[in-house]
Length: 196
Image 1 (cartoon, rainbow, N blue to C red):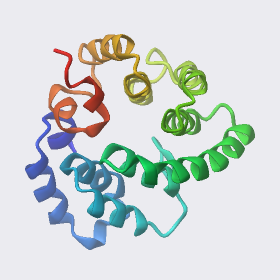
Image 2: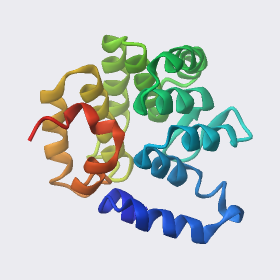
Image 3: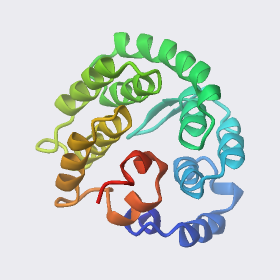
């Protein structure tokens, strides 16, 4: 994924993932999802999400209901009316998940994402701030920058471009998965394209 996150190289990332083949579907699930979003192929992204056997994608860095991934694909790739019911379904799941474990930053990040999709911005900010407090960079050099990157996305997609750009500037000055190449190709950053 260094090709995509580090350099924004979509074709090289696809070539590497194709070398893994079907046997690595589960292990490379998230990487394929990010690649398909970067390729801006809605049908392929939706088909990929539907292949997930569980209703939840969960690993060390992510806690994502399938409905949230579907909503994000629709929202980021040009089908916002199809996104709303999926965001609502995801929010139902995430409200219960956060209530059962409010100190899980992954659940807070997912909740912030769903709230942004539902235009519940104050709730989104509260969830992403809680996630940043749970996993600050000063205590976790791996999860901390990821949470901070998601904080920038939440602010960018809510229209708070100044805060998003300030966070991005900080992320580019430290070791993180946020790079100029990734900023160029990921649809998460589309609302910032008209800023220098």
